Amino acid sequence: MTLRDAFTSILSKFPMVERPGWHIHFKAKLWWTLGILILFFALGNVPLFGLSAESMDLFGRWRAIFAGERFSLTALGIMPIVDASIVLQLLVGAGIINLNLSDPRDQAFYQNLQKMLVVAFAAFISLTYVVGFYKPDLGIAAQLGVEPSTISFLLFIQVFIGGMLIYFMDEVVSKWGIGSGVSLFILAGVSQQVIQGLINWVPDESGWAVGVIPRWIELVQEGDLGDMILSGGITFLFQHHLIALISTIAVFFLVVYLESTRLEIPLAHSMARGARGKFPIKLLYASVLPMILVRALQASIQGFGRVFSQKMPFLGTYDEYGNAVSGLMYYLDPIYSPWDWFPSLVHLGYPNIAGWQIALRLGVDLAFMVIGGAIFALFWINTTGMGAKDVASQIHRSGLQIPGHRRTPAAIERMMEGYIPKIALMGGAVLGVLCVVSNMFGTLGQASGTGLLLAVSIAYRLYEDIASEQMMEMYPMMRHFFGGE
Image 1: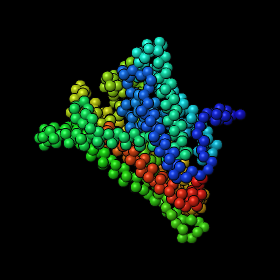
Image 2: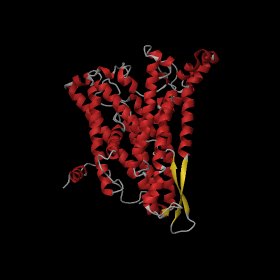
Image 3: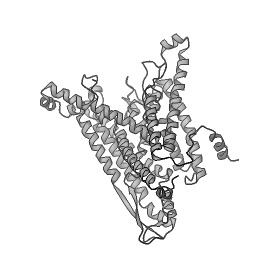
Image 4: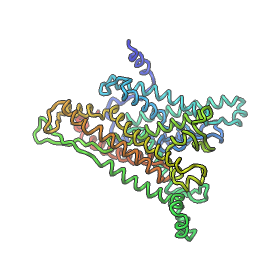
């Protein structure tokens, strides 16, 4: 028995959600998806027992991307799943683990490795939360007559179990529902934040309503709105979220446009004369999901920086909100909003930060997102069966060929190699720029530019998935043709 077989036999015993052995009807898939969504929101409203009010949220600014609700059972969000995907994609993409993901045995081994890594990351991040950021409630410890460390252990168990529940919920949606659980949770979280940023009438620290609509109604009622805009200028528009509203609308339409931008490769059937088709290669061929991997890498860097900053002073210092204000971590900290790069807004909170420091931080974030987006997009297509070789095999098996080329997988692959990797790299870089620019101008509800891009793209793809499911439900022969149940 090889080491790989030994791993497979051990990991296969880990609990998992079985794939249905029969066709799941469209309405049943909708009910499964809706049920998991309701359960996700319900778990997000279950607070952690024994948590002190002095606790901090490790990934507070990343909530729109990693889903979940802070200080609840969903505190981990999709972070363990994303981290596991990052590690596996790097290992497989670099050839350290040699897997052919078109082989069912290699696919099963890949999934088993992912399960192991999800458990490991869930335990590690839960421990990081409890050791550095989640403080035990000393009052509850005294009432129960136990040590604070016991309450910390209970917090660890709760956070870890919540993270594993999200993993199993993702499995249920992927196998019994429509789309994926990760995408569904991101869409739900971002949509909730955008709606709150639009209509929430509860006042914030400034005394104005959080939502942009009720806030501007209050500003109009205050009187002299024109004078306030003229005196405040662009800073006034940033502070009262009008530019964030415009930015959110612009990003929505821009992502829809990018999703519809595609290059179409003509195809012809080798056996049926006159039967022609097209293979579309979208500009966002790798989808927006690789952006999660880039942001997760940045979040992990910031998490390590917070943990080790006291032992390594060069990493920098943090304010009371957990934001890096100096050192290496300041320049590696992404741009989240106009308050991180617009000089007059930055100096309201941090008057000692120089202009060149702001510019360097902005440049580092832009370079990180562009290069990281391109690299992870390429890894993504190669590890999810979307690469040139996999696409060529699918086209060849379906009896199609590219007119003017030989009907061999190698000929089709050479043709696809000229387009798919380049378009994937270009799309990843474009998304990287768009993420940073949308963060610079802000978004409603502080959903972040990356979160908004993800939500719009996921909603667009979910619409396509639902339309496809309905089509296959109406015409069962199409389901068999595309390899369905």
